[in-house]
Image (cartoon, rainbow, N blue to C red; front, side):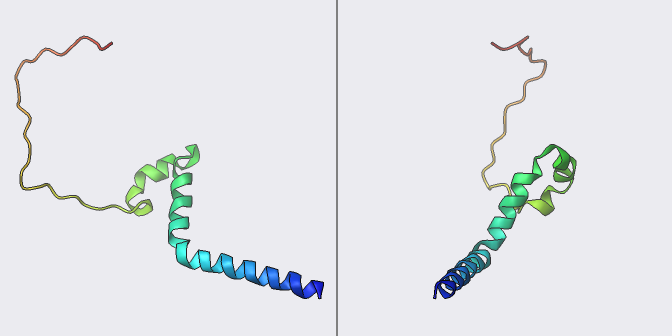
Length: 81
């Protein structure tokens, strides 16, 4: 009887893990990739393949855009405090 109970618990746990994998599998994979992307050994690959690693979305400019005023020969500050 005790072996049947253990077997039943194992089957239920496996079923729960499978359901979680089916429902959240894509998100779990993306989280894993994101967390490993910025390790030192992965940085070059991450920067070269960001579009493939992370989902991206093009953002078009709006109808009303803002233009900064341009000033010629403006003196920049020597430093900041």
